Image (cartoon, rainbow, N blue to C red; front, side, top):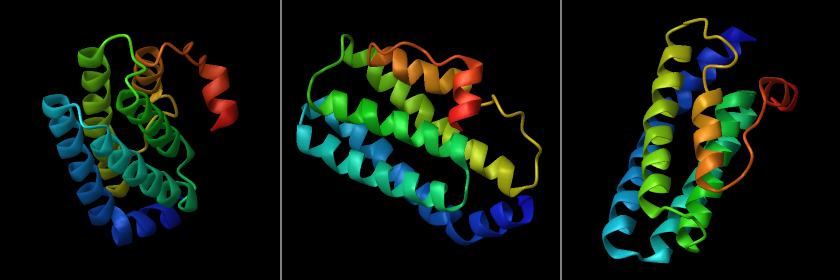
Length: 140
């Protein structure tokens, strides 16, 4: 299984990183302009990333991408209590996901709950209850 993941990431890792950089730019631009179209584009890009991660059977990174996607959607609709806090949580996720994938690609054995805090930060920014460790592991 680990060989499949590493091999798959070698093929698509560059594309995922480029897509996440584009999302980061969209989030930064949205903050300056408030244009909901930019968040729609970010949501679509995160959906693509999530699909690739699911295909690679990277369920926890895919869950992080899903939570980023949901927060980007909420940001675009103005459905967050703190725009600044939500944008910050999204940006942190956009940094953590590629770092996590780079570590996986290099063969690092990462604990299963490595992404749990980031996932819950994204959920909190949407006003959604955090996941317990058990919920994340069972769902992942």
